[in-house]
Image (cartoon, rainbow, N blue to C red; front, side, top):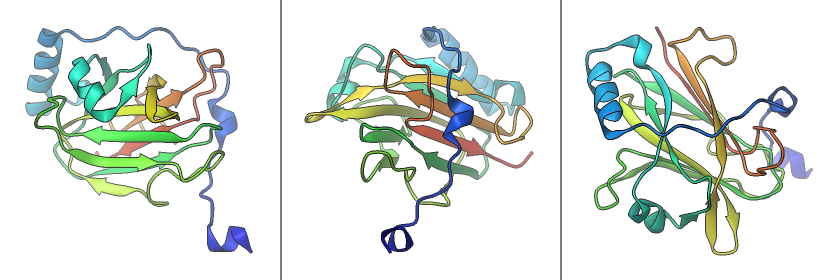
Length: 191
């Protein structure tokens, strides 16, 4: 009865276990500016995810802490993009997608939280459509009254989509286990 009232979306977490991971290299301001210019010129080779380190003021505003906190700069085409969220983790998870890293001006495009531990729902079951362009994703898990940043792994291909037509932001909240199914965002768009 409970499952019928609250269906749980399908999510194959097994394919996201024991993946390799290394500390991200954060982009410099010049590299960020170059990517923005490449996106504006519709350079499809620029599409993808890149680790960036926002100012502490942004993290303070969002109540995100921890040594792995960072944002993923998602370079997407200027057209509608499908965004799907999924999670399978013991800790409560949160995915925030922002239009800017400026703590005084940024607006949340989505701010999704898992309803309870060990639930695959993160946002609407079928996802949402968002405008493309440059956006920023932050994934984390709840500890007390704040959020702690997750480690991320970025994939330019997923679910059989060729490179340049999708991006997966996979994350893990446990720093000792390389299972990247805790708080995931999947972006896809037509070629």
